[in-house]
Image (cartoon, rainbow, N blue to C red):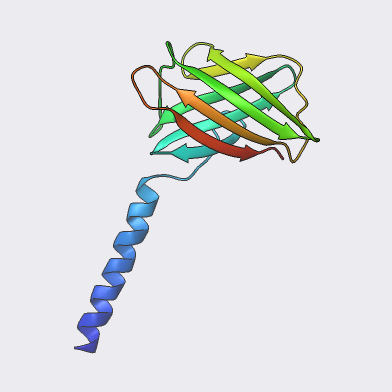
Amino acid sequence: MKSIITIVSAGAALAASCAALAHGVLTPQYGGQVAKVNDVSYELVATKGSIAVYVDDHGQKVDVAGGKGKLLLVGGGAKTSVALLPAGGNKLEAKGNFKLAAGTKVVSVVTLSGKASATARYELK
């Protein structure tokens, strides 16, 4: 009886680990930070002069044409709201001179055509 319980427990643990791996690891594809909302990956890439959010669904690029977004940057005692616009393919982008110091908290709200808004949170490193 103990061996059956051991085998069933081991099988359940193996099944749970396989299910977790099936959703994949949050590995950045564009050099940024990844947040996952409802199985959709939102990757924030902050560079000098622009901030972009790339949208992927299970490794497939999501066309963001007709979509929009907004970023809230909180850091250094200031809050800044920035509009994201489609920039081709799966990229939403805001261009400008932003204060992007380490520790800045970023909240992105992305709304794709015909879908509900998705909110993701990041902290710049």
